[in-house]
Image (cartoon, rainbow, N blue to C red; front, top):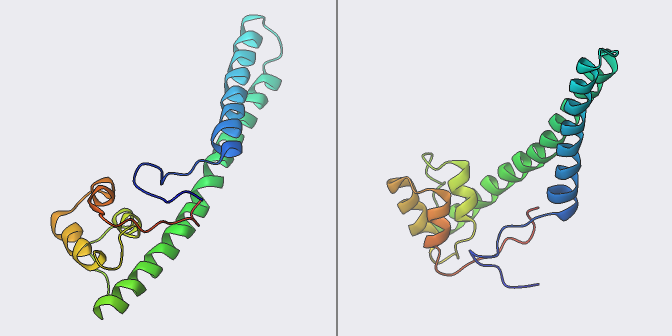
Length: 144
């Protein structure tokens, strides 16, 4: 596995991010085309409306499938980084840190982690700015 850094830390799952997203988008487009065609031809509109509703349901499921595991991972990362901060400093993480900041801070090495936590809270750094500020990258190969 390649050593992780700022440039290559984002992970894409091809089946989900490419195939499933394109299929969901195609389903929405086709359902709208079918609905317009049914309205213009004065055909039965009910099956076309049902097709649009099914497409909307698929898109909602597509979004939920991704958001629920991300929230669970964020909770685990917050707990892990809070424990790591406590082990290193005997203090809990600053309450001003957002979950986005904490997930970005997980890439900092133990040596720079406490100082970067203070800086991130004090300066309200964005997650991207935090990642760019990391000097010694600590990879996270478990997040999907």
